[in-house]
Image (cartoon, rainbow, N blue to C red; front, side):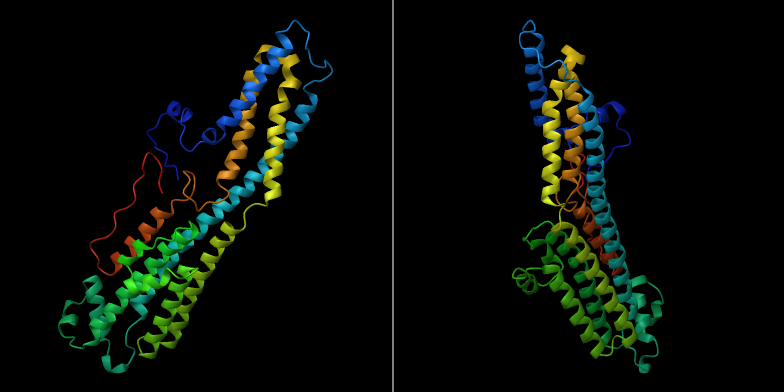
Length: 343
């Protein structure tokens, strides 16, 4: 995603190149402008010998331009809706990971009356520095096991967010998950068609094991399972956007109409604009080719193009937020923009 610098001047923004529509469409604009130069020279530079039909005016091109503008606007609105829905889904991912982490730290622990709240106080002291005497008078060996379970599950939630990002970007290298998951589990994920879904299954299995051990109340198990369902819905929404692009015939029709209009435009305006025809064609073709390019670029918001969503930055932030809740200090550094682009 392009990160705007508030200190960048208006003039520098005007002449920006990276991530702009011109970066994708300049060859098309150059072709139509060059062809319009040839047409203008043939029509005006040969003493009228090759003058095109005088009845061919700008009127039909004006009518087509209105319809084409509406058509491109509708397509770009559709593309932006997909982009914005993807951002909302990842906003929901951030919120759900935080909620699940809070549930893990507050709802998972022994529920037998014999503990009389001591173990819960000891866990709170471990994470938040509260009730320091509680940890001192707590001598139950189960405390360390529960704390380890908390850490394992929080790490697995963070790994899930990273796995969804890699899955949406068709990246099969899961090396970065090894700092959050056991090596044997990561090796098993390499054989999975949908690694994040496999991580969700493991989360559900581990929650059930904790319930069987008496660490989770039956009512709380339903809450945790509901959060896993929220994860599935978020991931499914992202996969729907990725796997269902704008229909191919619709995109082809847009590309063809824009190309045909910009190529034929010099024939309709050369009698009115004369030697200024190439300049007029360059401006109009930049507008139409640019709108066409923008719609194509944001069609899939989960890629690595400069204007796609910064999923690496989001998942790194998620990992840092979650691990801080369990007292980790070696947190991943926030991702910084590289040449104005945040991945």
